Amino acid sequence: MQAFTYQSGKLFAEGVSVDDLALRYGTPLYVYSKNHLRDRYRAIASAMADVKPMICYSVKANSNIAIIKTLVQEGAGFDIVSGGELFRVLRAGAEANRIVFAGVGKTREEIEYALKEQIAFFTCESEPEAARISECAKHLGVKGRIAFRMNPDVDPKTHKYISTGKKENKFGLDLARTLQAYELAAGLPNIEIAGLHMHIGSQILSAEPFGEALEKVKDFCKTLKAKYPTFRHLDIGGGLGINYKPDQKALDPKVYAAALLPTLKELGLQVWLEPGRSIVGNAGILVCRVQYVKDSHFKKFIVVDAAMNDLIRPALYQAHHEILPVTATDKTVTGDLVGPICESGDFLAQDRELPDVKQGDLVVALSAGAYGFSMSSNYNSRPRAAEVMVDGTRATPIRQRETWEDIVRGESL
Ligand code: LLP
Image 1 (tube, rainbow, N blue to C red):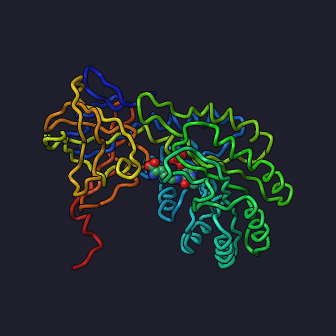
Image 2: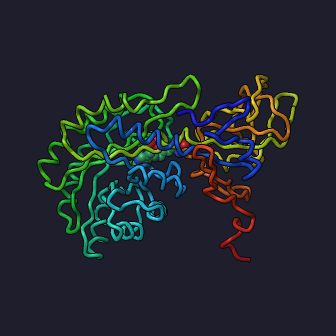
Image 3: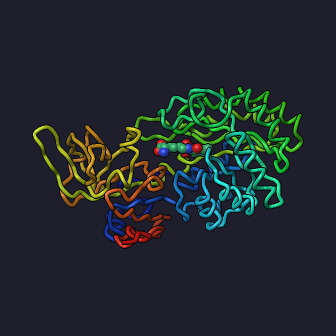
């Protein structure tokens, strides 16, 4: 579905006018479409239905508990990367046996928390981590289930900061070393070998790198399955790309599925997926209000009340977010859409054709549902934005705007 459309010249989120939302909840404001979320989840579930996958939404993409709860209701599992994310998904009602825990730096405290909650398995990034999981499990008198993360060394052709499956990345172990790691882990007293994991990167727009990676681990999985009776799971990570520009084509879950299903069926393992962006990315927008229009001799700057602390993707990855006016206009200007933060990297759009807006007008950044709010900060002591979820004609606040009091909470004089 198209969640954000113009109706009589005004931008709507599903059946609610964005103008109204900005008046009711203020700006900067994140607005999410509940039906878009559900749609995207269902598209992946139906494309991959032949292997009955466990779809573990990657919580880091957007960790608001109302978003998580919507996906709990769809039957999702969750890919988490910290104790904080485990706390969130449990708070939202997730079932522990649908949770997988990734990340290169899990602490003892986080591991013990996850073991006590009996999550499905840890995706394990190194031999010392397996040793630590075993120690923690021993301490609690349980077994720690692990799936080593294998780094297949494929190029996902995405931004270098979000490419994770090449040999120079910090993630996982190479093929030869993974085999040794399984042998070592199998000898640890409190470890159960549950499966294998990979995740090659994010915002990947073609199915080929996924197919290539799966091909690389296929025989290895067969060996492991024969060797360890408890080896039953294959977690192929997330990474499906979305369209950030009108002329860009998202990776269709059906195309992704067609490339992977034959091999997955042949392997006969329980398949786990970890999509984040492809579920929530285009379900969200960031609404901001124009504070000033500043014409320098060189350039036009549209200064809005959202900044890099609200949406860091343009500054960090030179990411493109479409900018739309809330009241439709055909008139455009060329320039930058910037925030109030004291850095030249503080822009939402740079050297772009932008809507010709005036002081007081509203504009939105599209495709801001993934890695938008979840990467936001209080830099420049700016309270983080409010978040609202729209379902048809109903809007529900799902996070209050922070206050200045919130910002100093926990500090002492
Ligand atoms: N699984 C693992 C182990 C991951 O590290 C990630 C993302 C995912 C799944 C979900 O990937 P997705 O389906 O969302 O592509 N902040 C960056 C993206 C960082 C991705 C980190 N890992 C951005 O804004 O583009």
